Image 1: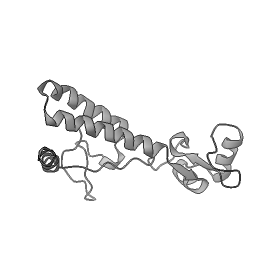
Image 2: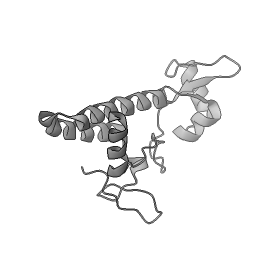
Image 3: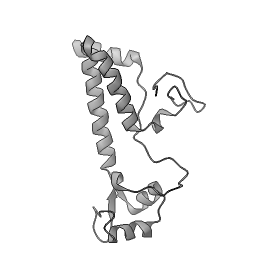
Length: 144
């Protein structure tokens, strides 16, 4: 799969080469793509390799933070497609861990199931496109 091409979709949002908005690209696919680029660039070494390794670490950290964020029942219902009472039942059955208190139950986003057949895509970590000029400028600034 190819990623940032610099093209803009009809809405003005950055898209990957196959036309999918970058905000909807699964983070695991993005990381795999970056790691494949890194394996090609690693033999040449240099600042770009170091920067790309840091980007991969940062994206992993942000994805973990996103998945571990805590949601209220209302937020969980909106994101999962399940009703609040269904989420409560999953908690009682031990299928979901309540990370809140009895009177105010909460769940971790990464543990939340997705209702089959739900039309809207699951929420994704927003990944914004960075231009080559921005990357180059940041590498030059680091060297000063």
